Image 1 (cartoon, rainbow, N blue to C red):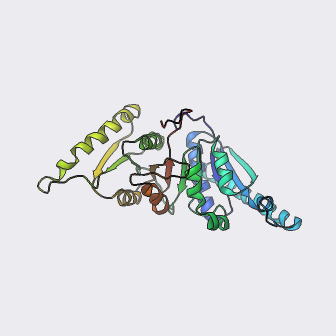
Image 2 (image 1 turned 30 degrees about the horizontal axis):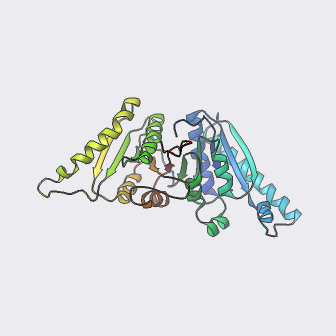
Length: 295
């Protein structure tokens, strides 16, 4: 999605500590990109009534609106404490969290969500808000995972590569993220089914190593300042990415989007990493042209 306009970094707010962690991460990202941080709180109670549910009475509704505004203000304060010069926009929108954030994604550079929060009751009924947003958003989505208690400076950005347009979009995002952070990049290509000669274990990986080198060549030319470590292994992709996430600042995975998570194995990889990684995960899907072609 390299052709997107320089929109804001959007993050969801719901008053939870997990959402505030995502706000702080998003503030740093917006500061690094030099774009506004747009804080969005989805007020679901009126949406419930519109959807045919009773909804709260006027007094309770006013109390809930007041609490929502306080949550937005608290998030804005947290963002400015994290990055004092970041431009913060506060927006209270009527609707359900997933639909509101997907709508915001149409004009955003990036959407950032916490691993939980964003309306726990709705999430319990309809599935993970974070995953739903990542699947349907029209821009990259970062799911902020991990405790985030220490500095991530110098830690690598990790990206999965499989040679498809999906992983090409992930590579574009990953190289840009590593360059922006002045961080090394680890590019991972797994081939658990590659034929291995016990007498020469490395021999079975030669074709895969060549494929990875070919995929990275153009990006390394574009980002000469990004140190790249190539990893080609027969370890299962989920296991490899989760292992690397323990000492990374960001893992980048690809997704086809629109309801069909895609990794290396029928969509299981991206989904598993989003749910289980030890650091934030960026989910990136290719742009779709007017002819329906991935690029």
